[in-house]
Image (tube, rainbow, N blue to C red):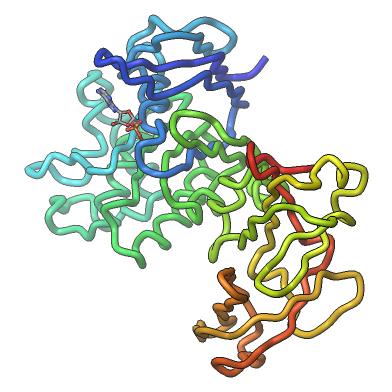
Length: 359
Ligand code: ADP
């Protein structure tokens, strides 16, 4: 039996908007789950239904195998961390972290010990007497997390907790959240629109789009076995390159290049003849020059970006465009024509109509 189960969960708002469609997921104790997708795809709505802050229109939410749809937020034993830290400005860090326990009338000595322990995990020991205004954004967010983790709840729900931080703080805080999860072992559900956050934090990622789950899997599975064009394009930076074309004589064109798709389609080659197909390859999968057992292409270099440990090369072939990620020592000259290859094992094919992967 899973710890948390979402069975065919739907959300239809009172105005009739169907924000979440048939969401199914089982979560084990201690897992770090990330909901990721573009803004408006239903991530927060799903999280709020789990928190008990939003009614479930249809479907069942189970905690430890028992129906929990009707339980209020407190009875669900969840703690939520929001984007805005919502700290009490006139209270010290200590009092902010202790607040929930103080309200419950917990013994002072117990509170002291718990706050100190929480502060240690969060690196806030030296800041307990400060007011929130004397803290950096990252420290404030740590206090907000402290307030959540001091209550020994079963589930932490985090809604874009890093979005108010600058880029550098976000990276630091991201690794701290991973560390906190390792230390507390608490089941965590985390919402973000940032695929890097999702990839670095999650045990499993749920990719959503327009209220529908697109794929659920480990970061590795989503990256190497994307279920469809959307997931393939959403996970990875720069995104996967796509060449769309109608299959003619077992191939599609990329500018003047003919790409043989029949070989990869194998037994399905016949059924795709005359139909649209999407050929995908990751920027880092290409090898400059020619290679055996690979798709060979030629294109013109339009722009290069030196990034330090690698470089992006923007290429065009007729109307078609792609980005290649290359070794910084191999950056080709602007306007030059280059040959490159894509190893067969790094080619993805998707159905042009349904956009699902062809396996
Ligand atoms: P995300 O967290 O992925 O950005 P949300 O779950 O907040 O998306 O919202 C999903 C969709 O539901 C959006 O189109 C949003 O406008 C809509 N929505 C959110 N709250 C309400 C509401 N109270 N009434 C009607 N529609 C809502």
